[in-house]
Amino acid sequence: MSDYDKVREQYKPDHITTLMIAESQPPAAGVQSSRQFYRTDCIYREDRLFTNTIRALYREAADIPEATLKEQKEQWLRRFQKDGWYMTEALTYSLPHEVTKQERQKLLLEHFPALLARLKKLAKPHTKIILIKSNVFEVVAEPLRNAGYTVLNQGLLDYPGRFNQHTYRQKLTKLAT
Image: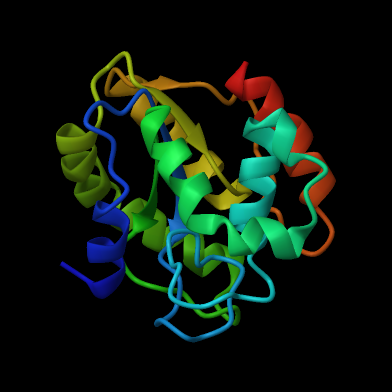
């Protein structure tokens, strides 16, 4: 179990109603990254996955300044947990930005059996699954459906990078309702 898995486990709901699956784990603690969703040990300046997910799911968070959301991260993660939401990744390790889309998709396909094994422990067929990022959607959506899982996205959910934050929030809000 990785260090990040231990951090994430603290926020695992007793009953997962909606499981979000991103591409790969964040880099090590302390490394600035927009993927440090469950880390509360320090404030990450580009905590876009966390802030945009919370703003999409909780209407009252939409207008809270980003700095305040980050300061309240532990409270929002506890609410996310209480509401049955959980986030994991298709890959159990971090990918650097330099990895090409083609290489990412190959890795996702190669590691799909391991993802499926982990999902059997996390999700039931009726658990709602939301896939984040085009690579994840394009490679695993159909195989997950074929395995009997309920994948909510009918199209990709853009990763909330520098330019996709508004689109991510709009699409996630629709999927969550």
